[in-house]
Length: 203
Image (cartoon, rainbow, N blue to C red; front, top):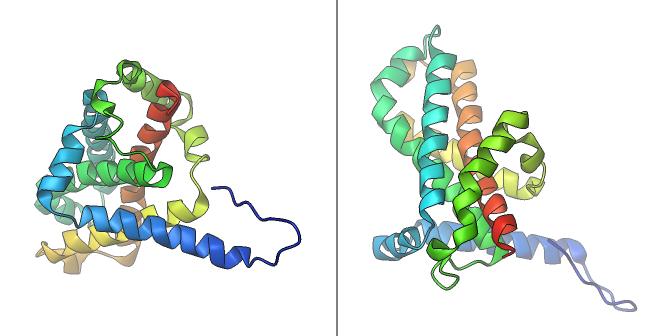
């Protein structure tokens, strides 16, 4: 995010930056809490390759999380909430992707993202980045403050999982921290899908 400050004029850049990030946060959360018809219209305007990316990333996340918790007391929590984890992980990818669109000011309906042919290569590009370094190089492109938004979303989604669980008392602080940290991965990868899509289409 770039700031333009004219010479010779006093400008509190910190306030400007804070307002810009606040505007992004407000718009992002506002969309996530908007009427389901609005959210469905946006989802229907997303390219099929991106939607398949949501599913693939969530599947990888679910398998790796299951492996991570296999020999810990948190396994009971995971087993009880496995179907909820599946839904949550897909949702995490989706809202990470939506944060990218909000940041870039990209309206998927107006831009007709669903019809952009270059996006057909998104899956291949993502797999290539994942095999290279698990997408770390693209993750480095995410603004640190926006990354904090995604981290906050991970905490929120974990809290929702806890509310639905009867075995939450068995979770140690360390296991809870592991799960929250793990939820951050699909959130960030959703953002990465947006980064790749933008590059493919020169948006």
